[in-house]
Length: 389
Image (cartoon, rainbow, N blue to C red; front, side, top):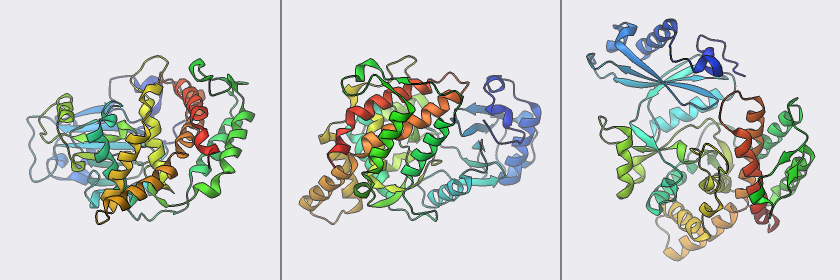
């Protein structure tokens, strides 16, 4: 349920959000904010002189791409296109996310921040394409993503430094326990029955959570600032040519790219956590195809090999410690790989409960429950990494 009671709240209503007609009052309000923060021509034109396109912003935001019409030109250095972001729950974690976005922008590793207002913000528009699940498996791309991780993990951000992944799990479990729509059990997809039970109850989930809790003393180390949700959709491949269509950006994947051509976005789940948690979640995401319309949504053939994970982590270590010898980097990479592996099953459980809650409450077409059940199957498939601790 959206808690944002301002003029934009209808965009979180699944029925009204599918209506392509934008309320003239909303368009006028968006232009007013753009005029106040961007100045220049944005302050002088009327709503008919701009185009506004609603983009996919997930469940926590609505995002508009606001563009000057081709016939309208800037007066000074104001941008011709911006991203206009509205928060669904403006009182939940938004201060932290805004601080994070400001720091990333200052360090040129995130979009520029043009304005912050009650309930949202205005950001730089960066012509780009999100990486697909196939893209993130390409070795040359993967190594550049590793460097992005290494850079983010070195940041010092003025938010709580406590690892919070277990708090997040406890929160969704409590919400799930109190959900009146909770079914008596969940059916795990058949192709995971070799590793998992056929069904799971809420009590079974609690048992798995307590099993993870029993391992915390061996997991809570090397706490760093983490993105916590770094799948391909949150990694942009930047298009150098602003006039080039987004689809054409994919041609770059056949060429050598640098990490400066990648940008991480959507830090709404960012917090401090073990570095292995962030890396483990990224590897866990390799198996999913978010473009699939029907189950199965995951394929175990895409599980990254230990060799691939080691090479990824070696690139991470190399970025943070370029002065070390290859032997020293290998040693550090081996240690970090061992830290990371137990967080792969934790990631699957971490997000399964979150997606079940969303699925029980959502009116959208996205199959939250289907993805969640596959995550539960994958949790049991990888649970041996936790047992080995």
